[in-house]
Structure formats: structure tokens, C-alpha cells
Length: 425
Image (cartoon, rainbow, N blue to C red; front, side, top):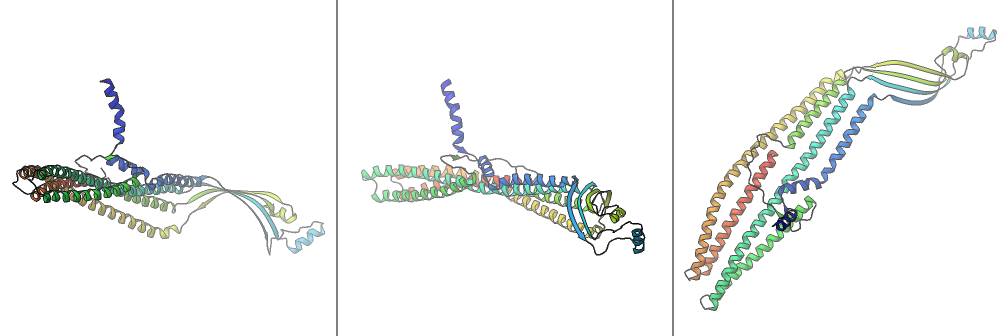
């Protein structure tokens, strides 16, 4: 007994690997989809933008050098020059060719909240980009659902066709025995043989269609399908009261981005205060009198505070606010339209689900009755009461009933998961 339990436990992973659920397909498709790489790029871009916004507080250091020639410079009056020259003093004045090698430092003391607003805008833009990728990847789920349930429907058709093939084979064997005993005609065997060949063609077409669907699914999930079987999803009740679609989150993120832009716009109205310093080596220096008496280069420094206030921002503020408000209103309307259409789609899907559940109840009764009729027809054909064509019709009627029931079941499950997709549950 212990050996049997151990064997069963070891077998579980292999059994699990031999099956593939809808949720597993969706997850694998998400991981394999190229859009996933966008998330890392968005995160990196967000960090870069936030870092750049924060660096506005780093002192701005500029090294420069210049040489100029001036057509006129400050100089002593001619009479004063003559008086000084009499006393043996040469006062050449400030030279027309001037030189400067400088180092400028600017440090923001108060930027009016600009750096904070830029960081907020960077986060809002990154959130919008992430949600845009979410929408793109979420739309992938609908395509996976369509392929998955397409394969399930083809599998159900194949199972029904095989069941019908088994019935044809069994009846062919009976009629073959009856033919040998002179009770059945060769034409009876030919009728069943035609049905068998036709059914084999349908099965071959079914397998080819399934192979195409499997190839598409493999491309989405990035794995070879192999011999794995798809697990039929459960019939569940979807009772989501809220719409959690990423499209709504994307619209909200865009609105948040507009709010961030408005916050940045507000900072353009506030004055900014900076500390600045300049040190330079050159000629002339800040001591103008000394520079007028000598051509020697000197070290010089300037320290101070600077206030900047862009008054022109007040003239365009009204127009900018109206432009942002129009964009915000348009997004709110877009959100309402999307919510309305989603609720309408949800209502339609709920109605379809209710209709299909009712249809399935009737399908079960029809399949049971068709099976009884077919069993009776097989007995009647054995007793010579009906001909082979009538028997084949009864077998076909049962197959159609079973196939219709399978189609309704898969359509019900597909609609349920379409509803789950609609409300993102």
C-alpha cells in the first residue's frame, strides 16, 4: 500500500504537466509577450526623470574663458594724465583688450516647488506608461480565450465524431454478419461505409484545424504544446459589482498626469531665489583704479543673491488652464463612455449566459431521447423492421444532438470567461 501511495505521489507532477489550464495559458502568454520588457524600461526612465528633477538643487558650476576688444574704455581725463605724467606717473588706463578666466556657481535656494512638481509629473507619466502596457497585455487575454475555447470546441467535435465512428463500426460489423447470412444487402454495408469515410474526412479536417489553433497558442505561450490536454474551465458565477478594467486605470492615470502638469504650471508663477558666486582671474579686475594704473592680471570674486520672477507666465496662465481642463473633461467623458459600454456588454453577456444555461438543460434531455431512439433503431434494424438508411439517420441525429450540446457548453464557458474579462475578475 505504501509503495502504491509513493508511486501515485511521484505521478502527480507528470499528470499536472500533461494538462494546461486557461489561467496557465494566460499567465504564460503574459510572460512571453514582448510588451513585458517595456515595464523595465519604464521603471528605468522613471528613475532617470526623477533623478534629473532632483538635481535642480545641485549647484550649477560653469567654467568659462573669454577675451574681448572694446572700442572705448574708461580712462583718465587728458589734463589729469598730463599732470600725472609731469610728476612721473604713467596712467595708461584700462586696456581695450581684456581677458577673463572665470568659474561661476549658481545654487537654487527656493525654486517655487518646480523640482517637486517635476518629480510628481515623472511619476505620473511612468504610471500612465505602465497602465498603457497593462491595457496592451490585457487585450492579449481575450485572444488567448478565443484560441483556448476554439481548441476545446474542436476536441468536443472530435470526441463526438469518435463516438459516432464507434457506433458505425459496431453496426457495420452486425450488418456484415447479417450479409454473410443473406439477411442484409451489400448496399446496406455500402451506406455505412460511405458514412464512415465521410466521418473520417471530417475528423481529418478537425485535426488539421486543431493543429493550426495549437500552433497559434504555442506562439503566444512560448512553449511547445506536445501531448498536453486542455482542462475545461469550471462553470463559475461572475458577480463583480465594480469594473476593474485597466483601461479605466489608464484614463485615471492620464487625469493624474494632467493634475501634475497643472501643478508644474502653478510653479511658473512663483518667484525663484538663487545664490550665485563668480571668481575670475584676468585683466581688468574689479578694482578699476588699479587696472587703470597697471596691466597685471588679478584675482577677483563676486557673491550675491538673485531673485527671478517670470511675470509673463501670468499672461498665458488662463489659456493653459483652459487647455488642461478641456483635456481633463474629455478624459472623464471617455471614462463614462467606456464604463457605459462595459456595463452594456456585461448585461448582454449575463443574458447570454442565462439563455445558454436554459438551452443546456434542454440539450441534456434531447441527447437522452436521441440515444434511446438510436438504441431502438439498432434493435429494429436487427429485426428487419427499418432499413439501414433510417438507422444511419438515427445515429446522425444522436451525433448532432451531442455535438449541439457540446457547442452550447463550450459557448457557455466562453461567454462566462468573456464576462470575467469584461469586468476583470
